Picture 1 (spheres, rainbow, N blue to C red):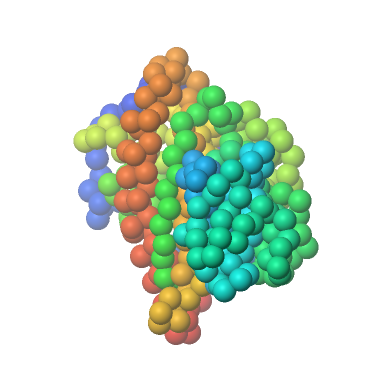
Picture 2 (cartoon, rainbow, N blue to C red; picture 1 turned 90 degrees about the vertical axis):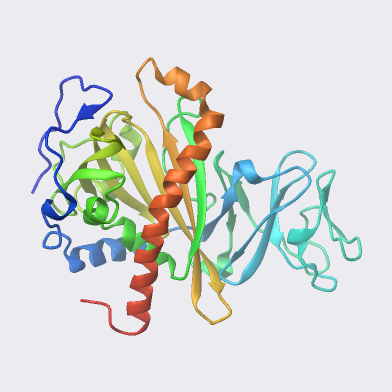
Length: 354
């Protein structure tokens, strides 16, 4: 089916639901959420190039005196800024006697090992080799060609976002016992939203799924994105949904989900209040836990924007709103990580449906 035209009239900031539908009376979505359809969308996402780039963390978390650290597929990685402000990255193991460089300070742009004082300025030294690094303004990435095993790209596949001066950005980070594909599969199942997250979503209808999207359904103000043929017909989920505010007050929107690379899913509000806002989900493999189970870090970027005059006040209140946005994301991911972990448990036991 093709998406039906979203109401073109001017929509109020909030809408009042006339007759709230009890949770157990809403329309079941299991017939529409076909396992094969989700699996094929996941397979196509996994076939797209990532260029071996992995999210290390939030740019705002990068301090002048300490590196930002993450384990990627069992490899310790550290990222810091040189004296000239340039982003530097490399293995998180000191080449001398193996000290954890994540615990070492940065002095004048040089990472100084806290065990014996060995200094690293981002150039090769004593077997320590730097890694390509990239700061997109919101997230910090490192390229690990040995881990990714793909043809390297000069930069990561970063989704288009509203201009920095127009949006309010918040970053949530969490960890689950699963693999990146389980996180991506969760995001490529929009049908679970109102059932699994009734505290956040109501009146959810998937109006377009891969292979069923009308060419007339366009992203707003995003012509460069629409030039990418991968998302014109066979890899977009289009959803009409209302975000709950409080009581019976909701915000109705149309949102589109796409997967631009194997470990990223993007939800973009295309119509309704907050059109242009983006939610990015990035999955980074961390390596096994003490029981040998895989662990995956979820880094979710929320960039909220609006063309309403009142949004200028929202931007000014950004420092107060970011903790609220992170709390909302954490609540959703408490459930969605349970979904991803359950999916991995069934897959690893050979009992996953389909």
